[in-house]
Length: 269
Image (cartoon, rainbow, N blue to C red; front, side, top):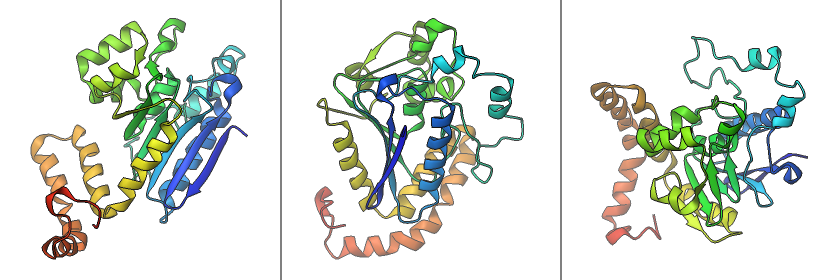
């Protein structure tokens, strides 16, 4: 088995399990990842997902042995082609070369990164909302040296996360980016000790799962959608979340008025 899915209460853990190939993803695995995250998004009991690799590597990218053996042919390119009608919505889910990378989910996903998250593996990590890296982990556009372009969101998401100048450095050089640098440029959100990426990600997922979910999801999707909008349109889009204030915020305000959550205390929310 190369993709494992385990639900831990309100958290889904999706694990790439192909250590003999440093968790490189082939087409069959990409399809399994895609289906796993579609299922996660549609399961009302689940609130947050964690994407991990075992043991050691997060993901070394797309399986180049498949490409070298003729597995990336005209049929493969046709299957992954994005025609002009693609608008990013998930009423027409589209599979990316690495699997879920063209999905815009309604719930957050956390990448638990150990070892390499390189080439297509880096694109998988960039697709996630948050990235937790072990101190010995690293990223990099390693496909630069093999003539394989970033075609699964890397050239789009990387500049949005770290800024254009830093993204061009990483994209053009293909150099190794260690965890400390990833944290310093905003590519990683948290660092943890080696061997602790999954546990640290699960703890972070549990924090997110505690919050009122309609509000969290409304703020998340507004932040994602604003990239394609000018300021007036983005503000108008954000205002749609006012409906969530009516549904969840009034009750939350009452809890605050009763004395909960004062001084930044999140223990009883």
